[in-house]
Length: 125
Image 1 (tube, one colour):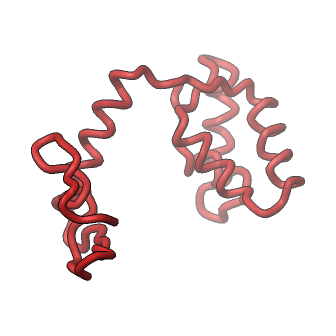
Image 2: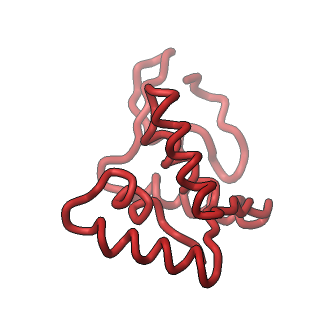
């Protein structure tokens, strides 16, 4: 069973509202089906333990104790995710903007980097 980051964090951080429910779900999933996580979930868990090797080791040990398996993404899945992220960045309201070091123009990051599928070289980052 695939499990999202929040379920692990509820249990690891002892969330007042969701600790009992999330820890029961993890225990049941571990016993019945086994638990898998994708790269982003694993990366977020490692990021949540940033700054202390001891905490990171506890997170890793916790995942091992549940028998969590890392399920790598295929190249095709990553390409689809990249396409979806590109669309997200372009349409989101606040956007991700960069300033051209040559002229100072502010441009949407994805518009800056890609035009019709080819690298735009008119401006430099």
